[in-house]
Structures are given as structure tokens and as C-alpha cells.
Image (tube, rainbow, N blue to C red):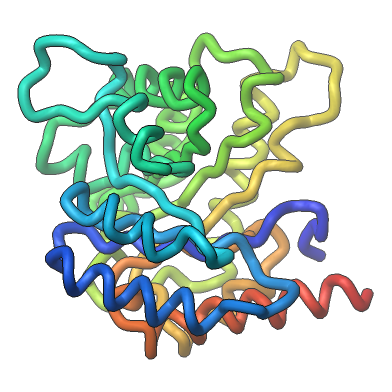
Length: 269
């Protein structure tokens, strides 16, 4: 059974979509759709940098939080084109995506840079969603577990267990992102459980409660209304990091409703 103490989270990553007026309109529709609702999951929107301020203004009086898709790990300096944690905080950003597969694939992000960004996020009290996941080639060569364990371990290097209270991890198999292919719910759950066990292994010498058991783990990869209910029924899967289905309120709001329904079912147990 899913741990009712772990937060349920539905996060929408808009990637490089929506100009400012489009982003504002979508945020208004989503905010209106959840306003006044009870037993909601944590809902976070990740618009492009150019729309952060506009979306933040829209979300201010709603239960929806604001996130950014990327940041540099430095607080400031001669880093042309980059955005610092403090700049994001100044815009009202609360959540930050770290290590998304598209950042790794197209922009040279590495396990080492993920670690630096995670440390910076925690230093500035941004809530990080660290993304991990294997490529199709790695899955076909039975390397999923090794890749995921390596990515998780590298992200958490040199951190202390007490620093991880706001950590969220997203399992995003690269072969399922934007392809229409979805990892079977049971297999996604198996990998989420592996992530949880890996986090515990990283802090095995610490005698405190196993921190991995309390960390929300999300699934991402062609999530849509037709798949979300089965995914949320899984024991180690606590929500979704959504791409394409977050680009319209008609697709995104049903995902929130499904998580709300799951929360109510856990409350009633």
C-alpha cells in the first residue's frame, strides 16, 4: 500500500512551449479548475523562464505552486545566459527541476552537475525534483537498474540525510518521454522502489529513519488521463511529472482529479 504520509504531487513541465500570454491563460485555467478544492495533491507548474513572472502572478491566490525548469548552481557571476537560484526565488519560484533527460541529452548535463545543482537548491531552500532514468539502449541491454542507481547515488553525493527533507525524485525513462510509449505501471513501480532503496543505501550508516521511505517519487513519461489511475495505485509511485498532457487544462486537470481521488482513498483507509 502507498504510504499516506508521502505527499502526492502532480507537476506540469511545459518545456519550451507557450509564450507569455498563452502561459498566463493556461495557468488561469488550471488555477480556476482547482481553486477551492479540498484534498488536492501538491500541484506545480514549470513554465519557460520568460513566463515565470506572469504565471507566478496568476498563481498567487491559488493552491498551485511555481517551479522553474533549470538553473545554474552559482549564486551569480560571469555566466552568460544562466539563471541563478536567487533570481528564481526573487520571482516566487518554489520548485526546481534538476537533471531532466533533455538537459542531459542536449545540454551536456552530467551526474556531477546534477549534484552541484541539488546542493545549490537545498542551500537556497528551493524544493528540488531530481530526474533520473535510462535510455532505450540501456533498457534493452538490461542496464536500467545500474543506470538508475548510479544517477541517484551521484546526485546525493556528499549530502547529509537531514538535507533531504524536501527532496523529490522523478523516474523518467528516456524512451517514454514524448514518444507516446508508457512504462508499464508495475515496472515503473519496481524502479521507483529501487530508487527508494538506493536512497536508503546511500545513508545506510545513518541510524535515523530510512529517509528513502519518506521521499515522494514521481513517474514521468507520456503520462495521460488514461494511464494515471493505474500508476497512482502503485505502492511506491507518488505522483507524476507531466509533459505534453500539461499543455492544456483539459488534459492536466483530470490528472489532478485522479491524484485527489487517490488521496481521499488513502484518507479513508
